Length: 179
Image 1 (tube, rainbow, N blue to C red):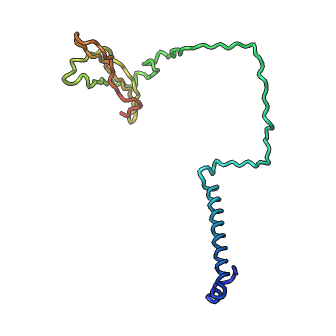
Image 2: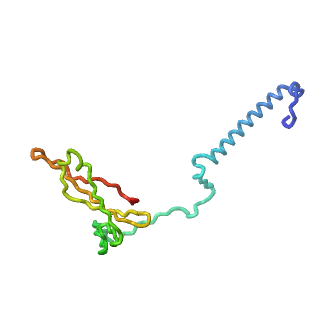
Image 3: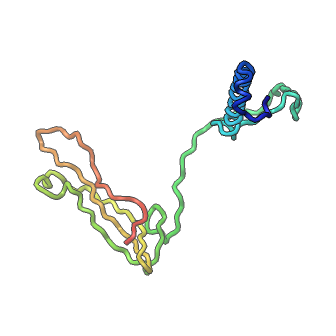
């Protein structure tokens, strides 16, 4: 009755046959949905691209694994620590970091004033040293070396108070600066 067209006369003639056909179609529909779900899981599942199925009948290409006994050696193991030597830089380096430039490249000196030296509490700090940093900046048609002079500060301690603070430096940004 599957291939037949459904008509009102055929439905009235045998209702038990129609009920059986309906149950068969529902069972087949459920089975087909399960198969489609399994195929979708295989195709689009979370590990679908990582899936590597090796047939059980395929043997290993390398054969069975073997172990070889370790041979006794007459060699001696010596461990030591080595320090890192300072790089030898050419004479034309401007800094220890190896920044090289000729007198043709202009140097722009930027004196950094830390916020501690400004304001009402500036008398509490003294400059104990100056840190110099060189950075290469690019201008539209040339380059310029920026020389930052950053003071290293120490807080003055009153004679009745013990010293607990270390020297500090103010912070500047790093990297290539467009100028």
